[in-house]
Length: 182
Image (cartoon, rainbow, N blue to C red; front, side, top):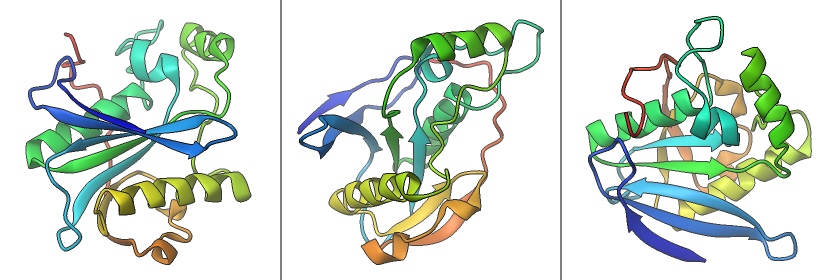
């Protein structure tokens, strides 16, 4: 649908942002954040990131009881920093089907994990998310993935799109103290 170069706050490289529309009738859009030039022959760092607005954008590094915040923006920014260190990679940002800001805010206030926008959910919705993300990766020239995830069970059906997971890269989920804009 659209593409633009941008420099995320708190990061040093210029990334490309690509908006893809998953379904013209629903208007649902996915966002691919790309650094470098992925090629089909080289394994590419990839993070399929299920989006949650408060967890990704506004959650502090620590919850109200002082415990480190895990997941959400922590995983997103860790993946982006790892991609910057290696010079090439893709983050596919998968927004929730319906944003419930009240529920996200309640999770932030209580220090609990946001409701799941998890790509591994049971049944066909998760498979559709994988299919849409897989098509997006193929369009970007990715064929071999170094998948950044802590949940390897999420790999059903990627081979059907010509994608091969050659490595699993675990995310620590630990804030590094260098949040964007900090």
